[in-house]
Image 1 (cartoon, rainbow, N blue to C red):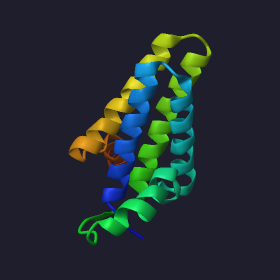
Image 2: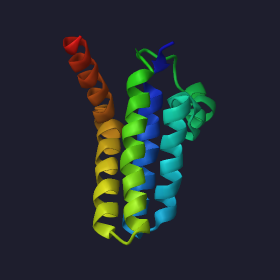
Image 3: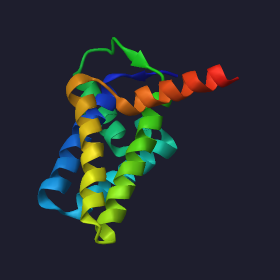
Image 4: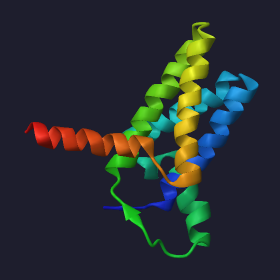
Length: 138
């Protein structure tokens, strides 16, 4: 079942804010929270993540009916990519490798910002590229 395309973009906007706060304050707790959100989005899909729930309950009822839908698999894959980067950032900060924490968190922030501001989902594009390569290999 396809999902409202505005939901993942809303989640990306919230993610952008959370990751920016983590980088600006150098506080690992917002990054830990975002890592958990990415994990929930990866396991349950974007609709079952906290930001997906907030969109469904608080935002979507105030908007008009959706005009664009998308398959849930690309955003779910994007959540897994975000999980990898946020996890690497969290691990970097925990081990004292601040360069890794800053770089990985910054990369996740850049990807979230691209989706929030321009509707360009890097993780979704990666998913489609992997699918194309897989189909050609078969």
